[in-house]
Image (tube, rainbow, N blue to C red):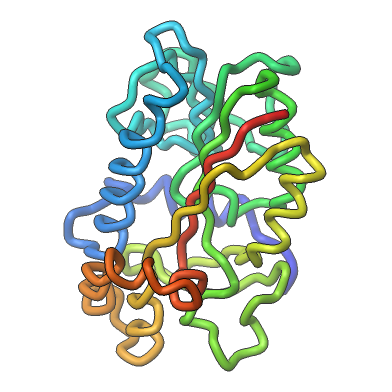
Length: 241
């Protein structure tokens, strides 16, 4: 169906990947490095200790080099089964009590495989008041979709690429995501845009590795307001209030 993401297909795709972030995939290597650097730069403000309970939602077993007591949740259990505090579950329906975690990270466009409203309300539910949520998502306002019916739609499913595989996910408008956050009691304190020109390059080149090289211009492009808001990826740092 056009308006449904098949969770079994998503699970099959990631179960069959030997590496979630292969070095041969320049697009996703850049994505991983950007997210990791962002987390390491932003998380110190939340005074992370070894005892800080962090929900690592859709982690695929990755801690991104950050401290804290990680609780790993993923629909692909074989990617996290070797870790402590690991559970197979969807972020739309988490098996944890209200306000159980000090904070949550949800990186790698995990939100885009789910109903964003269900997921963000559920993540908000399990985070303590004044706790943090940092998540990454792909937006419909990307230059990849400019001049198409997809551009800036609230929620639409698209066919895209993932390490040489065809992938299928939701893309969401920034306005839609911010409205969900507001309803869920979450305040976006910082918005970070990246993969700004690379999606436009992909639109013309149809080659993810060649397009990924345009990521080097992000540090310039993100200072141009109208341009940066048309990025493919967005990271939001939020507080629960």
